[in-house]
Image 1 (cartoon, rainbow, N blue to C red):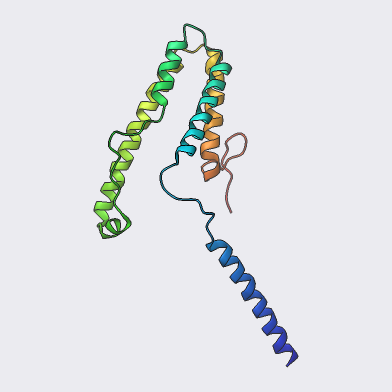
Image 2: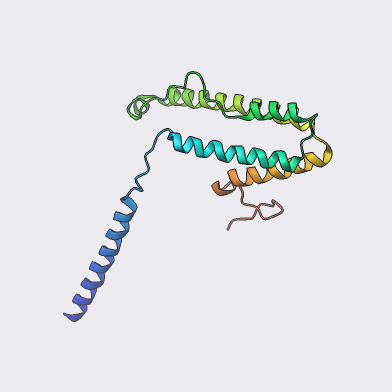
Amino acid sequence: MFKLRKQLLIGVTALSIAAMGLTAYAQTDGAKKGPPTPEQQAKFADRMAKMQAKWHDDLKITAAQEPAWQTFIGKIKPAKPAVPPQRPSKEDWAKLSAPERLDHQMEFLKRAETRLAEHTAAVKEFYAVLTPVQQKVFDEHFKRLEQHRFGHRGFHRGGPDGAQESRP
């Protein structure tokens, strides 16, 4: 009888711990999903301005390079499209066939490729104006930016030298 009570007590304890974990997991932080708020947009713009000012100072942009810098900043600045791409609702997406879903994904990738090509052209154009010392500084800033952007998402698995670690 005592053994059954002990097992029952352990089972109830385990279930209550699991229930607490599930309720904590199910709770949301109240963050609303959707487009950024004006406050979030202002905060992002402020961070971008600070980062650009730091890059400008670290690169020691000369007066002769200033027009190229302004052109570069203008070209890499994120711009909202005049007509935002139409995204199907969850219900519409569920109704699409596999080829139709792939067509939507292909269109998204084409737009992303176009943006990346424009960004790459802007970087190459500005990079050609820089001195070799400035190019090294730019490379370091760009490397840190990439590590920040992609380092958290599983893309960066190597050690400090970039070598891939073997997985068991």
